[in-house]
Length: 178
Image (cartoon, rainbow, N blue to C red):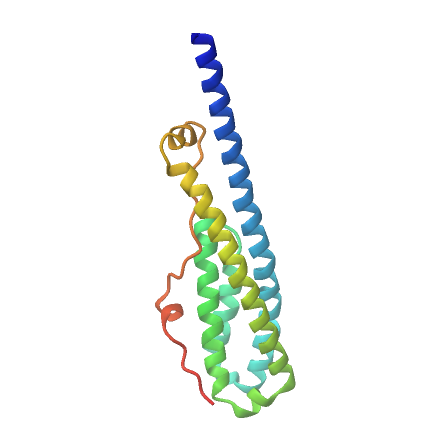
């Protein structure tokens, strides 16, 4: 009887452990998918900055901030990467606000093309964030639910951060000008 109980307990621990590994891998895959979209945005930023720079050279502070944020976002732990991505979004919004003040720039074909690409990439990033957050929610639930949390903590599974809006700039309703 004791041997049967031990076997059942070991099989249960094994199943929970394997589920946690699969969910952790799903979270990592979700972040990697989002990272591909973020890389596309990184690649677009220098072109966008150069086009805006040609029209708004005296707005160098905003242009430098966008470039600085892009270079700092990569690396570090998951939480700092997420924070860096939010800051890049804020910097890009500032850049687009600067562009609003230049009618010639807004009519520039290159700028319009880059702006359209950026909008498409931002949609991809939003979808990737939702997938990532869904994966993190599922994983974190398994790490928090009793008795699964005992097994998770025993094997070193830790909660993962959600990709959430953390800046007031991103929370504000954007003003649309026609």
